[in-house]
Image (cartoon, rainbow, N blue to C red; front, side, top):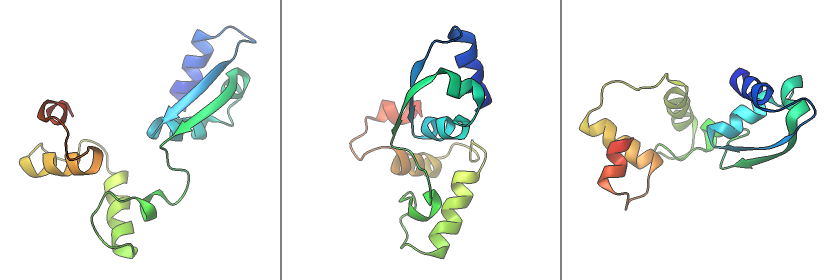
Length: 113
């Protein structure tokens, strides 16, 4: 939120506005910064794409478990962990691909992550 407010202040002249678009965690950043005067001054409109507003841990399908308290606790731990989540291993690569990419993802795209 601090960074977004700083970028808007540094790149837009007083009185100028921008359309803010936030995808995924960028949407969360826009929402977190929405009440800040520097953001409100420069935001003409906001587009939120594929982002979580509420109940993210309870409704996320990252872990292949039945919905319930266990999945919510584990998802909260994973989403709340500081990245990176340990060393890069074949298992961690498979988990990252499962959680963030489609089955047909090109190997070079998986390696880039």
